[in-house]
Length: 126
Image 1 (cartoon, helix red, strand yellow):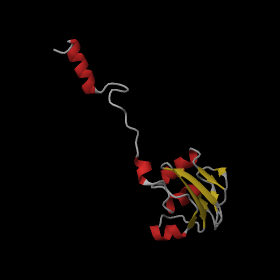
Image 2: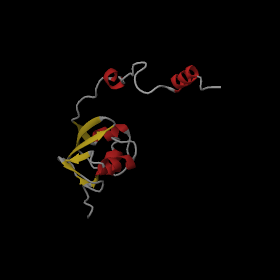
Image 3: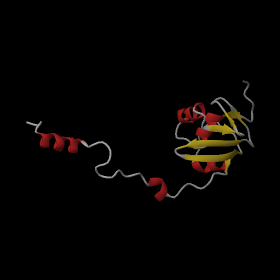
């Protein structure tokens, strides 16, 4: 694949504009099918150009960005934001994102403490 002047690898670009923390995470997202460019699943070596729409599912959220400027090197946050147009839906409120299911006491497997009490009641512990 010949490298064009106005294009850059999709994994490098995602990392350079700070959508992922590392380039290897960006490449892994591409290999797992979490990155689409213009509605097509792409591999990490796919070349993006200005005007391409990149969709990335990462950390439980979908980011939809349009490439304005191809970047090969990681840049500061202010420069990174200028390199794309963000069309992503707003992130969910923190209360919704942080709500974890709570298991009722006594439901599911017993805890280590519960197992020890059961064994003591049955007389198995010395």
